[in-house]
Image: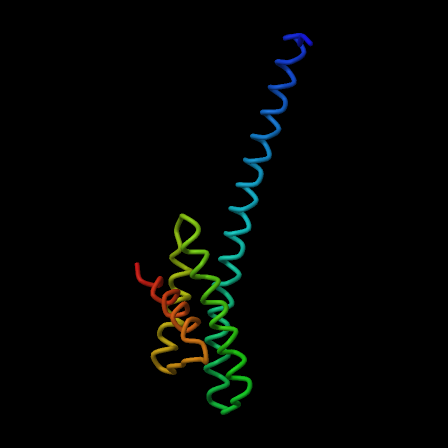
Length: 128
């Protein structure tokens, strides 16, 4: 079977164009997702620290523990995004630094040494 070059070349060009277009679109979508997620997680960390400080004054242990768990999750998520993406993470690092300062005032460990280690590593990313 013989292929006609006049037909084959445009088909190959369109196929390559589609593949490259999909790859570029995927990269753009990932970048936008990471940027949006980072902003969201930064706000979560700021908010969690603020709420935890308020709850500590009213001594509501259950609410405090729930917020501590959510703070750890936000810290882990923000640390992961800093590690996975390039760019300026000044606000993210500021959010993590706020969590570091909070943890110095209110140290915490969980039932999971691995989780505590991962959280500590994420908090260490607050340094420039």
